[in-house]
Structures are given as structure tokens and as C-alpha cells.
Image 1 (cartoon, rainbow, N blue to C red):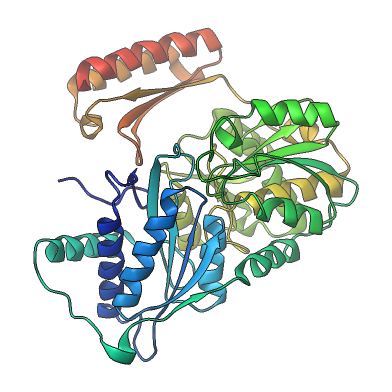
Image 2 (image 1 turned 90 degrees about the vertical axis):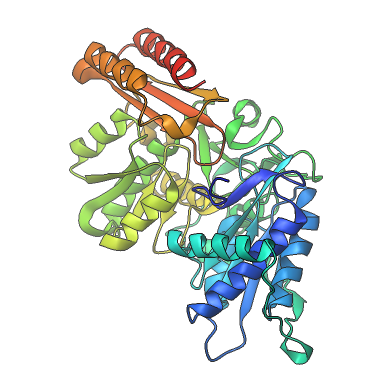
Length: 452
């Protein structure tokens, strides 16, 4: 059996892979492991539990709450809020544990469980491993030690979480957004209420799409993975910019007033220059992943800003930032971490800070994002292959070597197994789009042949 925890928690099809029994068992295991490492020592433990609007989140939330309370943990149920809101509240309320139920940008039938440690930070890999080992031991028959009487956890609905989180977002902005017209696509997800409210409180005129979740329509043709509706709405309403979130709102992509996409690399570039100007870009460094467009790296070099690159995954960006005291990092997909104000990627905060830069400079977003030129980049997802053999297949190694020889210094190749889905991602950059497309197509065929 493979490892339950991927790069972003435990995910799968709800009620098939991710069952109520699994959610309950993992929650009990998490409580026991954190107690064993001393997290709960000297006080009664508290957990914050939130979810996105997926229908399956309702029964999975019930399972998680039951598991935690049965293990003696008091639970604050914050309801439907973004992942970064659960992380923030875990820290601001002094909770020992945070749990978010969401599969982010994945389709509605999927769901996931993500745990946060005290302070709102993602759990270390070794703690996730211990939780999984403990869960497996007890699911095969080893009995739990169970509290009784007053020792069981109490469950409280914490409605103040929404206002506390929105107030935090607005309070950390460097300037207001008065005079800006912004379209927000909430992906019918966790930010459907939060993001419009935060932008409005910050002074923007807000137009919304994708903000009517019904439990079934999350990410359905909208949000950061489907920008067509946002592009059309921005142009139709003559807005200054548009922002799109994913299902759990830990990421943000943008659209300029002409309807052109502004991706995570461009957002990082805009924020990096603004933070350097404000003196908040610590060590004059930004952290990104190996998937960042080569144009981003060149733009940072021209601006005299240092770039540190990590493996793909916002957890690795965050680890690098925390280890070296950097203030800004993120991914091309729109996960942007502003470590002074958030412990994880925060799509609403990212959109607010991007809009604040537009408001402060008086320059259109297209001009600000023009600091970098995106080189043609082709990304092909190859499903239903043995992603574990990407690094060990001689056939793939030979194919990559040949592709790199053809591209030379004007491009690059990256093959990466997805951390959350059963597929391999093939990425090719080149100065010419047709060359990038041709090379990526050949590599995708090689992946199917070697790993299929």
C-alpha cells in the first residue's frame, strides 16, 4: 500500500478512497501522535476544523470532529473557510492543531484532509509518517486509549472565524484599493464569501462570479483552472483587474483589464518589486520552484533580486523561506506565500496585495506584469502511468537527454510525478512555441511507452 500523505495532505475520491472511517481514524491518530510528541502537554488540547463547500465535506467534517473529540481534543468548527483561514485561525487562536477538508482545485467528487501544526504551519513529513503508521496499526486491530467522562473533547461552532480572518487580511494591506474595480471568481469554493468581503472592505468596487456554491459546482468551469469566464467579465465590466481562486482559495491567478492572464510567476515578480521598494523583501530574495518560467528568472536577474528555487510544491517553498528568513515565495500555479502575514499560500491575500500594488502605483496590471516576458511553455499531463518510475527509467532518461540536446541553452525540460494525482507532468520551455510543443509531445509519448 502506498503512502497516504501526498505533497498536500491525503486526497482521493470521497466515500471511495477517502471514507468517513479513514477521516475519523486519521484524526484520532493525529491527536495521539501530537500528544506523544508533547504538543498537548500541560493544557487541554484544541483543534480548528474547517472545510470547503463540497457536499462530501459535510460527512467528512463530522467524522474528523468525532475522531478528535473522542481522543480528548476540544474542537472549534469554523465551517466553510479557505485553507489559509484555517491556518491563520489555528495560529491566532493558539490552537494545537488545524484540520482542513478540501481537495483544492480537484474536481468535486474528490476531497482531502490537511493537518496544520500549532502556529498554522503544515505538519512536518516525519509527523505525517507517524500519523499514518499509528493509523495503520490501529486500523488492523490495536485498541486506542480512550478518554471518558470529562476527558472527552467538546465541540463548539466558532462563527467569529470569518470576521477575524477578513479583518486580518484588510489590516495587513500596505494601502487601500479605493477607485479600483475588481472582478472576483470564487470558483464556487471556500472564498466565495471571504474574498468579495475583503476586497470591498479594502475599498474596491467588487463584481463577483463563481460565488454561489451549492456543494456540487466547486471548480466547475470556473476559478483559477478555468479563466474564460473571468476574462469575459473583466472586459465586459471595464474592470481594472480580475482575480480567480481555486476551491480552497490557497492560490490566485489574475487577469488584466484586456483579459490577459497574469500567472503566479508574474504575480511574484510584481510583488517582489513592490516589497523591495517598501523594504520588506528580506535578503533581497524571492523563492520559487523549478517549474517557474525561465522568463521569471531572467526578470529577477535584471532587477537585481536573488532567486532561490526548490522542488515543486508550496510546502518546499515554505520550508526554504522559513529556514533562511525569506519573506516572499510561490509557484507559477498561483500559490504565493507572504510569510510576514501568512503561513501558507493565501489566494485572497495575494489578490489583495496585487490590487494594492496597482492602486499604489496608478499603473495598469498589464504594465506591472510586463516586467517579465513568459517564454513559451508547454505542460502535458500524462495519466494512468507508473509515476514512481520517472527517475529510474533508462528509456525516459535517454529521451530527456535527447530533448535537452535539441533545446540547448534556449530551453529546458522537466518531468515530474504529480504529488496529488496519478499522472506525470511533462514541461518543456523553448524560445519557439512550436519547438516546445513538438518536444513536449515526443516526451509525453515516451512517458506513456516507458511507464504505461
